[in-house]
Image (cartoon, rainbow, N blue to C red; front, side):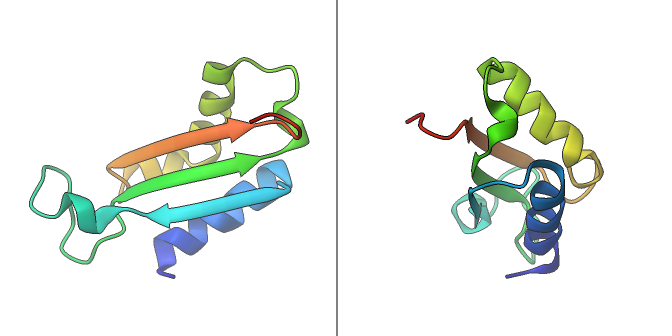
Length: 90
């Protein structure tokens, strides 16, 4: 796991105390595309399940995650796909 992946994991764990957290570096599928970095770690898929998302609309959940990762999104992360759910949701 690279430094950016680890930073994403640490920040999301601190912000949401998730029961499930998967941070997948998908950068290799975007090599040569706009925003792709030579060393990877520019495109990520995140799946997160946390009680903090209970009763919160899908778009608001994504905004919560984007807020927690504002520093990464302003710099090295070009694209972030987020699947945020509350416990018991599919």
